[in-house]
Amino acid sequence: MASTGKKTSKSIFKTEIPFTETKIPTISPHDQEVILDLLCNLLAPLGHYRRTHTTPTPSPGKKRKRKNKHPPNTMLSPPPPALSSHILIGINSTTRHLTALQRQPPAENPPKPLSPLSLLIIPHPHPPSSLPHAHLPLQLYLSHISPVSTPPLSPQTLLLALPLSASTRLAKSLSLPRVSAIGLLEGAPGAEGLVRFARERVAGLECEGLEEGRRGEWRGVRVSVT
Image 1 (tube, rainbow, N blue to C red):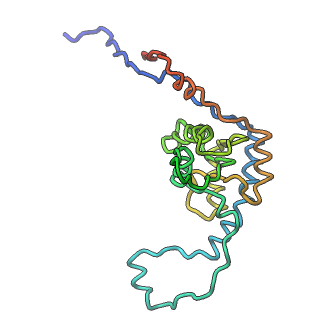
Image 2: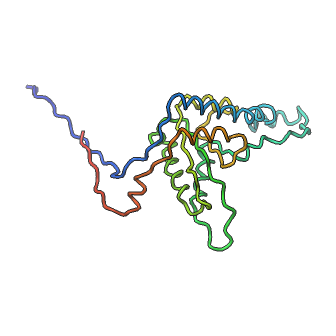
Image 3: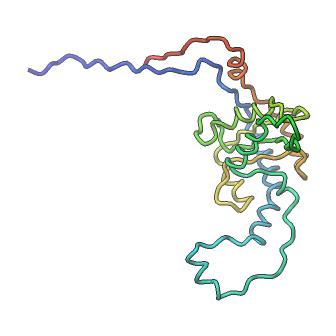
């Protein structure tokens, strides 16, 4: 005879890091719209240049077929907008730059100091919960306190976490299929209004967990049961 008793569900144990979670600055919906408008206006010349003066790289098969069809274009393209040398587009380029800011230079013949970021824009409302973006807030904080960034970064680089829908507008402005992150270097031409508005409206990044870890105190293990 089959048992009529209720089946008890098994408990699930989860461990969590005992340090305080990184606090992402909150931005009001109105300020998000203003920041996005200013940013898209700033990026529009780069998108226009990409559309009109950049030839997409064809696949190897198409390249062989078109090799003798069209003569090479010998007309010189105008130089790209000045902003192009003051911007990082994509997670990879942003991560490389932040990593370089964290590295300790050699004692002799130190390299030329890298330009710090004034703004890091991520089209995700909570980057720590996004696998591709999760490392960026901590890296940004570390680059700010790193001895490589001399003179010290002041004011602090701001992290602007925008809604997911912002990615579509940013990609359209840049004439790219998608945009995962944008870093504006300090002194980017034309970005003064955007940077000023962001510094007036957005708080700095807080990473209390890193400071707790640097103190070397044993904080135990957090265990939750569901």
